[in-house]
Length: 139
Image (spheres, rainbow, N blue to C red):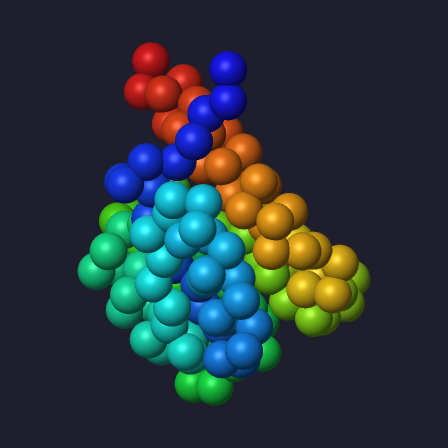
């Protein structure tokens, strides 16, 4: 059985590149996700706290607050600690990757290596995986 996202699957894309954000936003919306874009780290932090999405895609190099600092802030806040976060960046430096994964990012994707269709497919997988983990923690 093929599962599809429903109207409650909210995604926040924190990305300062308008062209990139638009391509991925359109594909995710086409697949049924509610997508909101934040254009810098501070706006991203505020948006995630306000909307409590199912998944956050997080760029690293952004104005006002970089992605690692944003991820650290999300993990230190009890209201956002459990939100699924995937780093989506052009940077694949080992030290940054280590920091992101240690802070609880589910995965690290290099923009040049992932298509919009692949991102949409993996979005569903990550949301389901996080829901299963949350259910197990509640038991």
